Length: 317
Image (cartoon, rainbow, N blue to C red; front, side, top):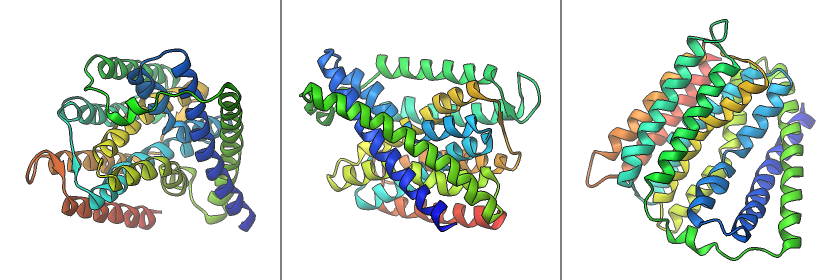
């Protein structure tokens, strides 16, 4: 058991480092290919924070652990909203842009509702299973969201504009290779040892994905949001969280269902309701108080809600 926990931690570190290296290397290639900062930000960087979830899901699905795959996404999305935005708002109030209110927050609602609908009313066979047919629907929704993002996007921030100098070719290739190796090694270690721990603790794969794995795969978003908040640019946090949540459902689960049918544990319906309520709570907080922002007090309330979610999850298990 001790070895399994150690290897799980090593796997998470390898995933996070691998994702960062791969994004840096791919960004350098994008700059050399003369892609605009906007396109680089919307594609390479946006998908970068969802890479840990994607890699873990691919390995889990290949091993037949679809419960771990779905639990990972649902748990990660709840933590992104309640924990990460809560922490970021506590550090510095988060201003929410009009485009996020009009496009990203509604897209988050749509993604959650689409997952609940497709998981419970299957188009490919048995209920409570997401087949490749539903996966194609999720990927089609991802294409639509990315199209809207490119067409209706605000002026890129200075942070994106500043990253315009590519790395030397040798360093670019090194980062790409290290990134791929890190993701492969991390995915292998996490998916294997999460199963071992789940069986030893008597937890279902969905539950271990909902808690331990989800917490770890949310680390890139957490670190990014904390850094942005300390620099008094906490607006990046909500864009990072909303974009990651939408891509987690549309892209990560869409691709996962193409590998193997995803069996949806009926107990996760309660967790999906919690995810929907978390979105609703965030939406209400944006429109309360002064301006369109999440205040420190509202961030504190979100952290309390996250603590309640964790208590509920543990007691339910």
